[in-house]
Image (cartoon, rainbow, N blue to C red; front, side):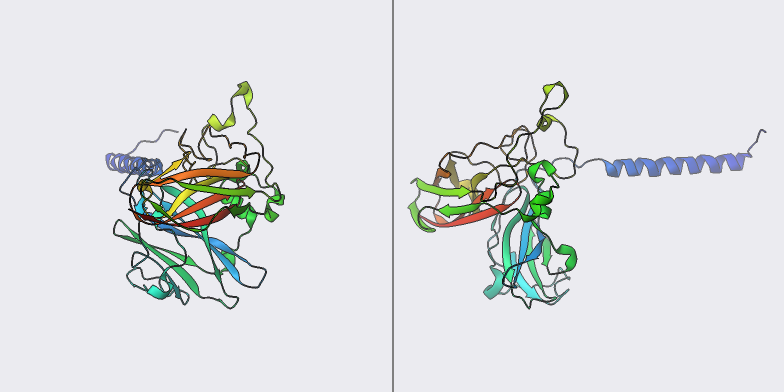
Length: 329
């Protein structure tokens, strides 16, 4: 059977078709990936989750996302970088300021590297913390961001969750990772040091993985012999290989004035090729030193107060060691 439309019906049909095409185009446009932003973006604090400690207290995990691929921030402890204890929902209003010098410093970083820096530090709260919140306020590029730490059940995590979030062990969901123990670090020397500008400061730690989990292995080779690390990512989370590794970072103080020898690999998720990051193809986790001793030197170009943070990882869990350094003329 043939149908014939009136001119008004034809115009309506054409208009509907044009509207549908516009909606589809709009959806496709919004689904396009964002361009890589080197500078000009913000950094946002992140509450990663919590778990119970053996003594009845609780451990809260925090990190951050710097949306830039290059620009790094230095935000000292103060009204732009502080913690506050509040009742549930007490700081939902971003215009409300709760800066209190006495509790503002909870060990958070003041130097913010690019991209995702997950599970970077922890804070223990008492057994009776209840429904209260420990809120991290971070202001960058005139933007206020907040991370709301709480004991809500949805935020309960375990070592396997941490491994999954960081793409550890090539994204493995092995149940053995639920009991994974983070590496152990022993610092050689004092944790408070003084050095002059231009003078090399020797650094050394001994680190080992007590349970050898996840077991060290390389990516299997795909068809044609090509290593899977060279293939485009197929997972929302960027993957990283297992194996003990250690690297120094600048946790507080301007990193641009510090030079490490040898160059330290990145401890943040930089997924660009050849970016010297465990999440960067075709990066291969180097073999640990035979004696388990990682040695390096750092030279500062400007005086000031710095905090170095050494980060040991087995590819799924992290351990930290800080050194406070006063740099003089």
